[in-house]
Image (cartoon, rainbow over all chains, first blue to last red; front, side, top):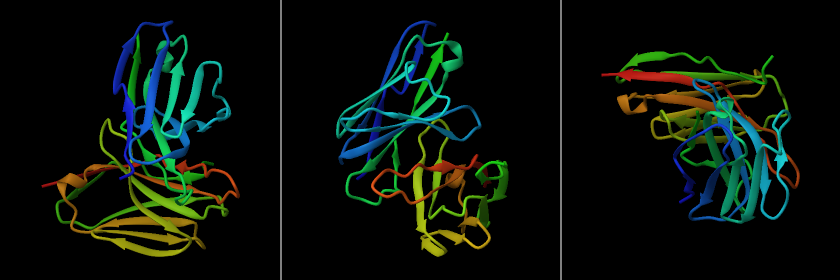
Length: 117
Length: 114
């Protein structure tokens, strides 16, 4: 149980294009999903928290107009990197907290590697 | 000063060794402590979850929390080459009626060689 998937696993795009990453909880309902970014050999940095049916809460320094988050259902959250630039190249990981369980436990997806040329 | 400090390593040990991984933290409000294992190019996998001080054992893994010292540890007994990964500590406060933001350490890279 507690499986989180991400799609795509890897994407290469040209500078200026937008990229959408999907995060799905496959066998549980997730009221809250989190989006992280991880640079090589660094830890996970929380970008934003999304709650189903409401606006995402962004961490300080994260541009909400650049990183659009939609949490349309209890099993799906999407992150759209708008007008991507090379500095947006990173490993993006989502996590989900299962509804009704300990609020402190998050299950992570496999990550999406974004390379912007 | 970072809220959570973790030595990035790398830590290299022979197969069968006991591995000790540690994190220190500064926020006394942290109540929940977790250890995640992350293989290269993969998402983190939850290994251990503990609340407050004390020990918790699960197979070859033992998590230890000392809140008085603001220090947590993960011990791996009989280490295997398959344990080679980056180990991330994470912790959070208790929020009422909301979500808990996890604060991660930098991760310690572990290599277990045959």
